[in-house]
Length: 225
Length: 301
Ligand SMILES: Nc1ncnc2c1ncn2[C@@H]1O[C@H](COP(=O)(O)OP(=O)(O)OP(=O)(O)O)[C@@H](O)[C@H]1O
Ligand SMILES: [Mg+2]
Image (cartoon, rainbow over all chains, first blue to last red; front, side, top):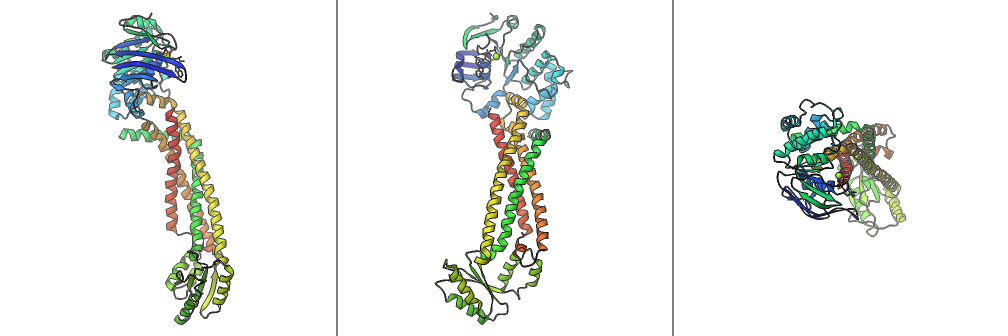
């Protein structure tokens, strides 16, 4: 589902963020990217969603080479990806329902699809009774659920999660991980960058550890450290 | 498709209301710029009424009395042709009564009093003379000579009438054209700024849209529509202005002393409508350019 071949990313003139990284992620896999701050985890995720372009090497996502993809094709790549972040990136002036509906609306989905899919996915993430709330009327965990609902509503092949539990307490994090696990069980590939060793140790999935842009460990059913 | 159109219109309208002050400034500037463009057109067209009789290097017009006999006309014609070294006989043109009458209707377009005195029967006919020489004294002495011919009512020289108006019209055209261009550029700049501000205000939404796979066109279209609409509204306002100005001018001119060229400075209503259509189109173009620049720049970052 995702293949990196000798991928290098240099920011500006001399910030080497990713250094000759290669790995494969099979369809339906759940992997953790771990490593100290600045080791290149977010950069790898951004290379996969084509927010950044590799300086060298090839990134394949869902059968497409995103490194030399035409800019006009990028939106269609993004439709097969779901992105979630530490800071949720919700629109504060829109309700929970509208936030999720927005993701379908702006890719031109007709209204009857929106009316069907949004309640379904909000039910899935456990927010069936909070459609009309605004983001700042929700807890952090609930906000992250909204952002997961938004990422999942278009049934992506891959979920890219950048420290989704970074702002959450352990109990809430467990709930979010259960949700990502459930999404993974529907066949969606999940790639998650994290500092949260509790979560990694609890899940026991594949762990790729980075240090200064280099892969130093790639372990099935791994732990944080 | 319907969902997309609905989305674009809704967003355009919402954004319009959010940035009311900037929008007003952009619309007003476009309107003023376009008003000036419209005025340039109208002034030029009005001047043309005065200049029409001198079109094509005509430097002298020999007016023939309306009761002149065919023999007298023939004599004038042969006298004019007798100076082939000074007068371009190839270009010598005789306007008979219907032709002269048609021309007079343009010259006296805003002067119904004079116009009512003229009929196709009483109108003087005329010879349009294109000289070969640059020597205005020579042309002037010829004119004096033609004035004495039987049947000649008057001889008019371009030097006396045409050149002042022509220079004036050229000057006015240059000034209004430069001012219109400057103001149009300012209008484009203001629309650009409004759209840029609107996009900046919604940068989080744009970020999310890109994240979930909205195409750049989908993101752009509401903003471009907004700019287009601003230009178009500016166009509508300028049309109202041009119409009001023209009406006031036409009424004012009609009260002027008949026979002073001022009253020729009016335009037919068909021409006015044409100018209005141009102003609307130009407004739309100004809006489209301003917002297109804003939309393409902002989306790249
Ligand atoms: N847009 C950018 N421009 C320049 N340098 C950048 C940019 N983004 C990241 N970097 C640099 O690239 C390196 C890797 O950053 P990255 O964000 O991928 O690390 P990370 O592993 O996600 O760190 P963290 O755990 O703190 O989120 C760092 O040295 C960082 O300073
Ligand atoms: Mg990071």
